[in-house]
Length: 552
Image (cartoon, rainbow, N blue to C red; front, side, top):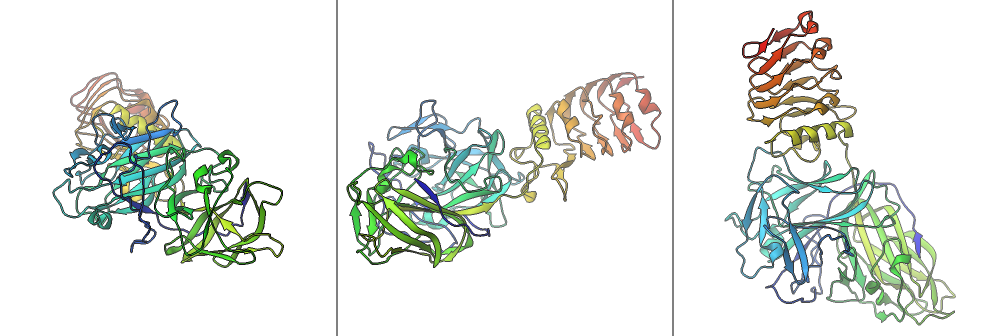
């Protein structure tokens, strides 16, 4: 059963990260964690400690896989199996970066390589992953530095999802403690591909890198109530209550979410009946209901959770409850739920079937306390089994789809495009594609291409005619071949420089009809045929067609 809590107006802010400690490879060990969780001095970074190597609770995408998605071992040259779980190489998902092996002895295969990005001229380095438009996905990026570049401290850099900066990656504290770091976010795909990018910032002193990247397909009902066209959800905490040590993930959770153990001074009880995960919108695993925190009849149950100090922001909060007793007409309990002193749900009736209460855009900051107050006639005290809290990350602007598609087509037609020509061409603005200029107001459009003397080869696709906001095309001094495509729709075009290439065929007559076009440089190509009458009659334009062409 799913019930909705109250919502409050939005605010913003930060990500989450966790630490994983991997020991030498063993045969299918079980995951475990320490009893303590610490909140990093850097805001909203949550640490998890694995005392043993996990079963690598991540599985490879297969048609019949329960945990559907992509599980990418960055820098690997072949599929690897760790504890019975397969990982795929990142070839085909990215066309930039170098590969390095990690020298840490007996490291698990998924952390044995990194892909790193030494090219300081590139504005970002992007993985493009096929997705279903509108579908929801959990994305997790994992980092283990391992001193791959001979340094003592890992670099600091940014993560970008579909043109929006998601978080800053700083794994120094985790690495110093022998831990990996991971970040996790829930998004809905806005197109047929999803871009995950790394980018340098003013703190970056060495090459950004990545160890693993996962994309897990979620069901439509999960994390409902969130406007995924405007927000993503960055995981802050996900706990099952009444436990000390063990972490639950795949295969117990078919969506491979990490459920950390949480306990406090409250007593816990064992639950005597099973729930049906499919009856809950968020599909929590059955195992998170096996215990619950509770208190005596007539008393309030107060839980300080999550065990971190939250930055002032808007959050998605989901709480899970189940009456622990054997199902009967009397196995129910009623209580009010408050979060941070504000009413979250009043008169919640919890039975052995279980119930979920959630709230979106819930403004929180600092330490948070959840209080459950029993009704006067409730036969037993309140209980709580599990909780999730995710920070709402507002999506920024996006380059209009037609321009993105056209630029992607141009990138495919070039044999050696700049290495940062993946992801959103314009956004974030400080990480736009090399040689691409974008509009500064209104709809985000491509307004200029300048890759003069860039050593490009390949051809110009017909889709360039869809970049209708272009004012300048400067592609001279390259090795472009093939015909000049039709440009009749580029009515804002002012300057066209295609000189000093290997372009062939005739000159499009439509160039003469572009009223704003004042510069046309086509010399030193292999163009043939007659000069269009429209160009001969074009007044007030600087036109250079020779030498180097065979035209009349």
